[in-house]
Each structure stands twice: as structure tokens, then as C-alpha cells.
Image 1 (cartoon, rainbow, N blue to C red):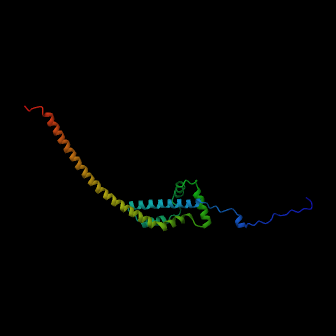
Image 2: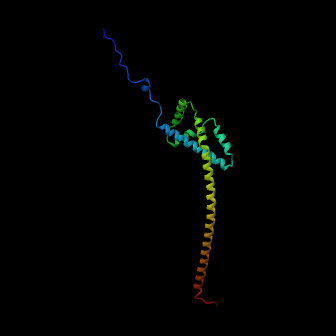
Length: 178
């Protein structure tokens, strides 16, 4: 229209900081991190158990695990499967975490090892020792049970022999020896 000017819309009361897209963090971030920690624990426990069975050195195992250059194969996919997360959702979470904190994902693994390796090792060694003690006690109980069973079996056989002798005596009662 001739003679009219266009007026800009009034200024917004929101700042640019509040009007930007919300950060991509979700409630799932906690569950993703928990799932990763559970996978870390699973891997460390398995490694410690294998090391103990093979009579290996725990110090060498720790240094081997701490000097890894990337997360152990299958940790991320195992974490996703454990919580039924969509494929690559934890990968996206780790990428976002890495970008925002400048912390590599392998550092999460190393921090977990630093905090938990000793306690996991101690608990596994204790469990193995208790398991061996229980196995020894079970063996002793089984031996005692076996001895009781053998005694009962012998008693039953003796009873069967007596019963058979009694039956023979009854069968031969009507007959006389010539």
C-alpha cells in the first residue's frame, strides 16, 4: 500500500540462550551410562575370573586392561542389548559425550578400572575361596552320605538275604529230606 510503512514485529522477551534448541540430553543418558558400567563390570569380572583360573598375575591383567586404546569389542552393543536400546543409540550418546566434555570414551573405561578393579578382584578371590571351601565341605558331606548309603544298602541286602532264607524255609517246610 502506498504511504504505509512496514513495522517490524515487537522484540521478543526471550534471550537467544533460552530460545535455542534444547540440549540433546535425555533421560536415557543415565540408563545408557548404567548399561555401559554394567558391561564394564561384566568384562572386568570375566577377565579376573579367567586370570585366576589360569593362575595369572592380576597386576599384568590390570596393566593390560588399563593400556587398551579403545573400548573392548562388544561392550557398546552388549550394553544396548542389555537395555533393549535402539542400535547405535549408545554410540550416539558416547559421541555427544565426547564432543561436549572432550573426554574420550576409553577414558570412561580407564576411570571404571581405577575405581573398581581392586574391589572386584577382592570379591572374586573371596568368592572363589569360599566356593572351594564349600566344595570341600560338600565333598566331606557326600563322603559321609555315601558311607551312610552303603551302610543302608548293606542292611537292605542282609534283610533280603534273611527274607530269602525265610522263604526257602517256608517252601521246604512241606518236604522232608530223604
